[in-house]
Length: 180
Image 1 (cartoon, rainbow, N blue to C red):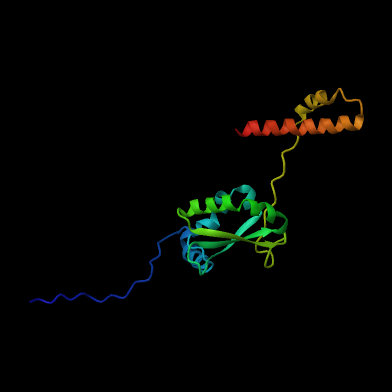
Image 2: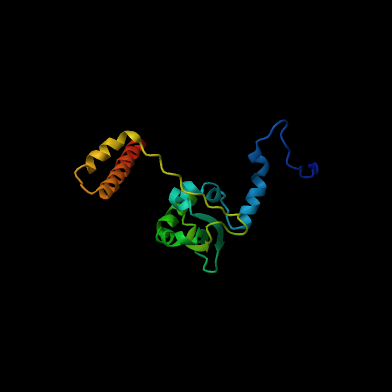
């Protein structure tokens, strides 16, 4: 009976490509290791937070930790939120939990807790919150239409306030019609 001998090979290190490599390939493993240390098995929650949470919530929150408690059914997602926005984010938590679980593809998150911080950031500015986008400049072509709406008012202070209100309403209609 012939004996088959398999050669012993040492495990080869990961071989690098020749030439230029994409930067994402070089940092993928260290980022995954850091994410897993904070409880994020799927880095997509961190990298695509604005798409998952929505722009309004992502502007004032950051996912910080995803931990599994003793209960065993689902994880607890901890969000960093600016103190002034915490009540509004608290009201959105059920919808946010559904969106996060949809990103995972199953009911991975059972609870979401909020950690409040100052608007300037936490831990020496590591969690900077982005400012809201500036509103579009008023369109000058709408001004005569706004003046026409407020023309019957006799009081000049009230008339100018109504013109400004009409200007804002007409501007908002124009921007929403342009987006659709």
